[in-house]
Structure formats: structure tokens, C-alpha cells
Image (cartoon, rainbow, N blue to C red; front, side):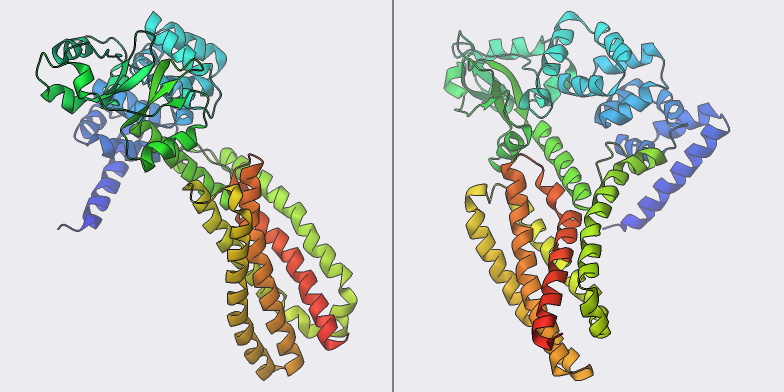
Length: 457
């Protein structure tokens, strides 16, 4: 098996060469270089290309490659790229996108650009994109694919295949569907037919003999939950129905995987105190990076005032025994890490539907026991170490505080994501930074109260 490192080095060299050619305006050589790359390599290079050079590089791509690369971009990056492309080029790319991707892009661009893009579509494609735009942002309706063709149970396999060949919806909508829905005369979902099974069927075999039963999902349902259903149940697609149970679209496995990737990225960033960028890091401006972080830093800064207030309140205790200040970073760090571990574990369990708000007491009980066990182990180590260096009184304070802080932090860290889920807030928002701030303040209160009790100060 070959070592992947040389491949990375080669791609980096191609990247540098492309940028040099673009800066020197040697466009013919740059186009030849891009033509020799695989689509995946082109996507990776463009993700890292400076914003000023990206439109130039994109215009040098072959049409088929440009359509595929553009369709795989984040909507915010597509919007930025549109600013550097001619209207004719933009309209051509837009018409090739999947309907749900068109709707997401229209949300990103200015209103006048959105109107021009919609006007460039044919009547059927325009209606499909407009319909998707009418659904709430986080609903299944916003991410579903249009149905290229609804089959009927009395249709023969040969007829079905002929109809599929003649569909006029965008190619991207067809390419993402490996199954087709079967509906009644009133468009109620009866089942699904897998395309490989349809291709292998005898020409005169009826659809009702090869279709399989299926569940459906409402167009208004939360798209993340529906996506997890698709992935966890390992189905290729779920039919999407309206309030009258009529078929209006499909949530494919490709749609579901993209939704879950985006949600995982959001959770990771928010647990670290930042907002999602919505586009590759190197394509994001410095001001966008600042905006994604400044709000959380302000919130956490206000929260940190609690810690300052606690220290101010116990100023006399610290003055009476200055040695106590040495252990503040140790205790707050241990408490914050313990709370973050619990929050991350529970947030992940919520995302995987392993835990719901009904399990609140069970989760708190489990995490409190975990925290207590960790506290006993760390407390014993802390007691032995501090007693050896200082005295038994200090050792007792540190050991006892670690037991209480770990138990408290694990309990707080487990309950906050569940509360967030209950009130409809992203559990990741309540994760690491916020929990650290809360646990720091509570941990210091516990620390000084234990110190005053044991040391009599």
C-alpha cells in the first residue's frame, strides 16, 4: 500500500503552481493543470484558494467539472463565487443544481440575484425551488429532493423504465435517487421500488409485485431527526408527505448524510464557543471569523464575572490562608473538564437518540455516580499529595473539594444538554464553555465553604 504523504505533497505543489499561474495570468496553463486533476482534487484546491483567485480558477474548469464542483460547495461559498461570475455562467450552473440546493443558495444571495436566478429556470424547476423555499428552514421540506417520477402499482417495469428515461427534472435530483415511490391515484404512498430491482425485473412484471413497504416523514418534521432515521434504519430514502399524506418529495440517504455532517460540524464549533462558518476556513474572511467568535466570548466574559464575584466574597478567607489560592486553577480546571466530559457524552447520546428528556433522572443519577467515583480517586491522590507537601488540614480540604466538585460538575454537565433539548435549544450550545463558567463559580463556592469548615477560618 502506498504512503499517502507523497500524494499530499503533490497536491500542495499543484496548488502552489496553480496560484502562481493565476497570479501571472497564464490562464491556458492553469486550465490545463486543472483539467489534469480529479474532481475531488479540484474541490480541495478551490476550498483553499484565496477568494480573489477563486472565480478566475472556476471559470477555467470544464463545464461538467464546474457543475459538479459548484453543486458540492457550501451555499455561502456558492454565493461568494456568484459575485465573481458572469450572469450567463451563473444561470447555467444554477439550473444544474438539485432543487433543495437551489433553495439553500437562494437564501444566501441578495434578493435581486435570487430573482434573476429563479427567472432563469424553466416553469417546472422554478415551481420546485419556490415550493421548497416555502417550508421552514430546519424542516424536511427544505432538504428533500423532488420526485422525478411517481410510479403506480399497475404499471409494468418496462413502462416505468421508459418514463424514468424521459423525466425532465434536473439531473442532480435523479442522480441522488436510488429508489422511486409508488403512489395511489390520490398520491398516497404505497411503497418504494429500488432501481436495481426495477432494472432486473421482467418487462411485463407489475410494480406492485416488486415494490417494498416504507415509512413516510412529514414535510414539516425536523430534518435532523428525519436524517437520523434514514441513516440509522439504513434505508435509501424516505417519502416526504404533506398534511394530507400526499407524496411531495423524497429525503434520500445523500440528503440525510449531508444534514448530519452539517449538524456535527455545528455541534463541534458551538461546543468550543464559536458559530459555524458555513464555508471552508481559508475561504472565510477575517471579519467573518471574528463575528463567529466574538458573541460567545462576550457571553463567556459576562459569565466569568460570577467567578470574580465569588473570589471577592471570600476575600477574607483567602487573606487568612493565602495557600488556598494555589489550588484554585487545579480545582476549577478539574471541575470544568469533568463537566465537559459529561456534557459531551450526553449530547452525543441525544444526537444518536439513545437518550431523551424522559431519561433525565436516570442520566443525572449515572453521571453523579461517575463523578463521585472520579472524585474519590482524584480526591485521594490530592489528599496524599497536599498532605505530604503542606499538612493534613490542607490535604483534607483539597481531597474533599475534589470529591464534591467532580460529583457536582458531572451532574450539571449531564443535565444542561437535556434541558436544552427540552426547550428546543441546540444541546451543543450548553456544552463546554458555558458549563465551565457555571462549574467554576459553583466549584469555588464549594471550595471556600469546605475550607472554612475544616480549617476554621
